[in-house]
Amino acid sequence: MQLPFDGAHLDTLMDESGIDLMLATDKDSVQYLLGGYRYFFLAHKDALGISRYLPVLGYPKGKPENAFYIGHPLEPHHQEIEPPWAPTIRNTQKSSAHAAREAAAMIRGLGLAKGRIGVEMCFIPADAYLALREELPDATIVDALPTMQELRAVKRPDELARLKKASELIVDVMTLVMTTTPAGTTKRDIVERVRREEVNRGMNFEYCLAATGRSFNRAPSDRTWNKGEILSLDSGANLDGYLGDLCRMAVMGEPTNLMRDLMAEIRAIQDAPRAVIKAGVTGRTVVEAARTVFAGSERKNQIIFRAHGMGMIQHEAPHIDGDGAISYPASDADRPLRAGMVLSIETDIKSPEVGFVKMEDTVVVTETGCEGYGDGPRDWVVAAG
Image (cartoon, rainbow, N blue to C red):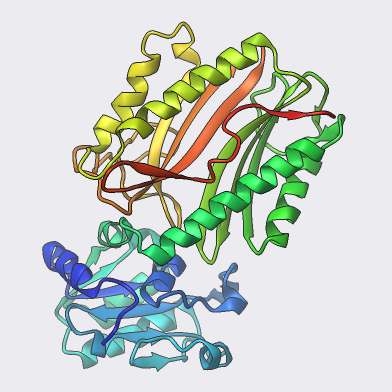
C-alpha cells in the first residue's frame, strides 16, 4: 500500500515508544497522515452544535491495511473529490465523545483492546479521552505527541515546496505593503492590508505582528507609522497547511546611522548560524554560533536570539532551543540535524532610540549547508511615505 508518509519510519517510532496503534485527533496530524485531506467545511473551526468536530485517524503499527478514519456525516461530498487513503472510513460521529467511541469499537475489532494506544494528549478533548478509557478499560493510553513531531521533522520535497512558496509570498506581501503605505497609516490598517494581500495570494492568514517608531508593542492598534520611523512586520500565513513565518524591517525615509548599525548587527547574528547549518551539525552548535557573535556586544542585554523548527506549525521539531516565550525542552539540541529539516532563526533588538528591530529567516537544512526561503530584502526596506 502506497502511503503519503514514511510508514516504515512511523512503525519504527511507534515500536520505540511501545505504541500499538496511533490515534490522531489533531487536524494537522490527521492532514499529514492522510496526505493533505482536511475537511474544508470545518477546516478552521471546531465548535459544532453542542460538541465539536473531531477527525480521528487510527493507524495500527505495521498494518496500514487496517487503518481507519472516523469523520462527520457531512464529509462524504468532500471525500468524493478527495478520497482519503484509509481503507475503512466511517462518517458517523455525532460528537467528540461519540467519535472516540466509534474509534474504540474499531480498536476492539482489531484485537487491540488491551494494547497501547497513542494519542496526542494536548489535542484530545476531555470527553473523548474519558470515552476511550470507558470503552477500552484494559488499554494503556500514552502520549504520542513526540512520535508525531519526530515523524514530521524531516520534510518531503512536496512539503518543502509549499514552505518555500509560503515564505516567498509572505516576504513579497510585506515588501509591497511597506513600500506603498502612506505616512500616518495605523498599525491596524497595515495589518489588515497584509491580511488581504496574503489571502489574495491563496494563503490562510494567521497573524501579523507590527511595531512602529520607538514602540516595542506589536499588537494591532491605532498607533501610526510616520516619516522617519521604522516599521517591523512579522507575519505568519499557511499554504495548504504549511506555515510561512518571517520578519522584515522598513523605514519611512532614509535609515539613520544607528539604524544601519542595528541592522548590521542583526545580520551578523543571523548569518552566523546560517554559516554552520548543515546535516550532521547539532542544534546546540547552531544556537551557540549566534550567541557567540553578540556575547561581547554593548547591546547584548537588548538582544534576543531564537532558533526553532518550522513546518505545519510554529516551533515543531527539531526542538533545538528551549529558551523564549514559547518554552519546551530542547530535546534535539545535541542531536545531529538532518537534510530536509526546516528552521526559523530570529534576532531582535529593542532599541530605545529606534524601536523594535527584528529579522526572522526560514532555512532548510541540506547535506552541505542550508537554503534560505523567502530571502527577499534582508536589510532596511526604504519607503517614501
